[in-house]
Image (tube, rainbow, N blue to C red):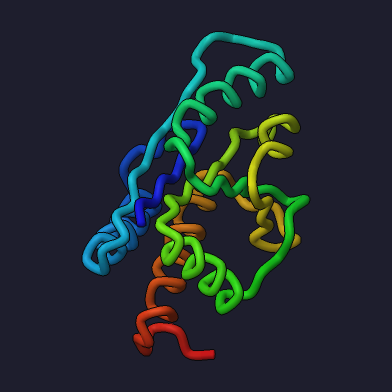
Length: 154
């Protein structure tokens, strides 16, 4: 299974970049490579126009036929085991997975509606750069659960 994380903005060096790289390396070692695609619109645009342009860039990053997951506060909440089971079914079906993280204004409503799943990482608002680390960790946790590895202790 190929995993793509398409995110608005650029993650520079520092602790968040290091944590993301650590989980990406763990996923790769378990045969679930995680590809990060960073999208950025640098022109000064009004918020609605910027979100629409970000949506175009994010759509272009989704591999053909991939199961698209929008990370958004209005989404469903899944516990780690349920998320792992869903990813396991996608893996078994030979589907790729793309997780989408919007910018400071969130995801374009049209893009969010077009995704196969809208997932919420909790009721609190998270910085979109931190969300990269959170979803990478949950992808690794799902991989560990499916492999019967003791990383996840429920």
